[in-house]
Image (cartoon, rainbow, N blue to C red):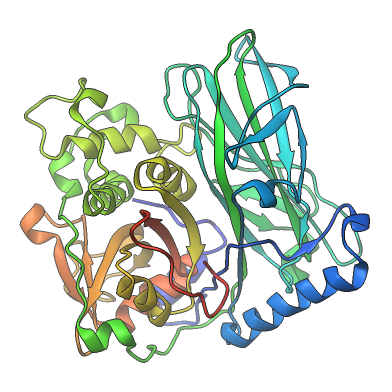
Length: 451
């Protein structure tokens, strides 16, 4: 289960009452559209052309749903930002010279940080969702922070969006909801414009990643990628999109089927299984598709008679100790990324965009919400936050999914009406998806710059 952010929950309730609600937006990786902190690095006219060129493409594709995804991955991208105490090795950020002292939980650490240049999405963003791919061996961890600025030049505080580690022996993965100032506030995995910026939005943002390791150690926490999807979502129910290429071909990917319900009562300290584990179960189905599930040696604490024990492992690996659940979007992609190859959170504008990814062999974990009678054929009557896997499309354009809420594996495969699904997805989570892929499945071209 994934509770909706407060900003979207009223929309879901309005949808249940048949009123207007909130649709989505999306984004694109590659080199960021930058309003560079160091303007001497680029002539002002070139920087402006880069921003305007990407903005035009996004607006043309957006049809009112403003979404922009930017990511940093590799030597050239890291050098567009500023780093302290870190260095680039084989395209990744790792500890270097000049790390500074830090204390956490009474233990001494050394840390270094990387800060992106200012990113200008080309619209007044009201939400920002960062995600990352990293590895933190032993007693090491990372933090991700964001900040924004409005059109007048006011700059928000740096807000913590996640303290994360590959394991949980020393540092518990957590977020820090709140941190309200006059421009932004953190809501689990989503940073939302607030106060005077809630209406006009923010014109630009920055991302900062801190890598930390136990003082005196030679541990090498490594950052492979960090990205963020910025969006400004219009209100209102959506009209079903026209079926695309995946529907024409009747494409259905061979994604294995796991049920979250077979895990009822498992590990109360990590959500107690059952209804609470839709996200790690969905993430596990996609990892199973890529044959990238964890091996038995990684979860010796799970009884051998547990069905699909890798789901129990994924629940532990994605549990947010502040939020109190396994539905943190970024924690799920952070878990999946090193195993599959790449993973990130973004938003899509319609199922036509989802079809492009499915046609490329990439299943999607989608976040939906619906009231009784709004999603015919669903194994549960209603949910204020649920995740499932889009695995394909019928030739008529309906959505084929692996819904982990099925009572058992045989009940997981479902087909949902296209219009019903889009209205359970776009107006509620803003079209949020996990994009998880391996090296054999490159991303298709993104017509709207949201991946």
